[in-house]
Length: 265
Image (tube, rainbow, N blue to C red; front, side, top):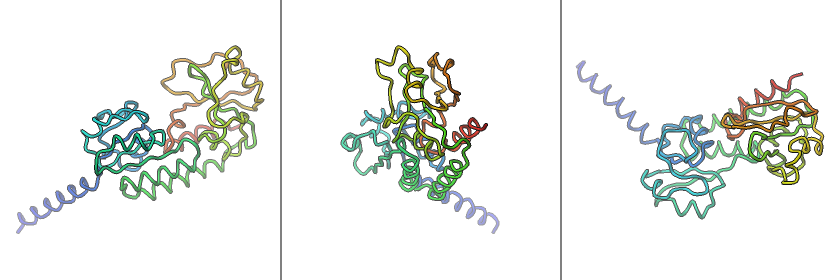
């Protein structure tokens, strides 16, 4: 009797593992922020291929603008997830027959990021995915409601690049700042690259034109240089790692904690 019970237990455990594996779709992720979101939703193990920019040690499938059709087909995916930077026509051209696709945004607002997580959870069949997405929304809005220094004029920069730029309306960083009660000093729409004529004076010229109370510079850990003029600005400067802000999704929660701490009097 005991051997039979052991056999049944092993059989049921094996069947359970088999069903769990079958419920895990083979996913190709064409953007690192989607891979990060899938990990957070508990679907990281379902990813079988990633873009050339991803840190995962998996087969490469090109980028968002130039996905590799042959590489994708070889992976026999059930689902391809990519950003809206991949055109619908391009996605259709590289999608194997019978494979589902999902194009999502996330970089223009917090609401768009929230919608991305909901759509990704549903498409990947993530267990408790809806609850996880709701948890992200709840925590993000809670953090934003508790920000110090509300109504301050801020200039949001990424100066650690060959050509510095600022974030205005219709960007995720701009939207987060406004929802935190801050005022954007740069009224530009989207990402505002410095014009050629500004290259002489660089960031100080932009600061003089926009008159912020505070400059926040977001740096990538991979950045090899930063605008030297940042050290001589006539307004307070906050330097933050952009790695928690450049990827729409769960990392924003940690980033908001960092920003909130930096803005304390």
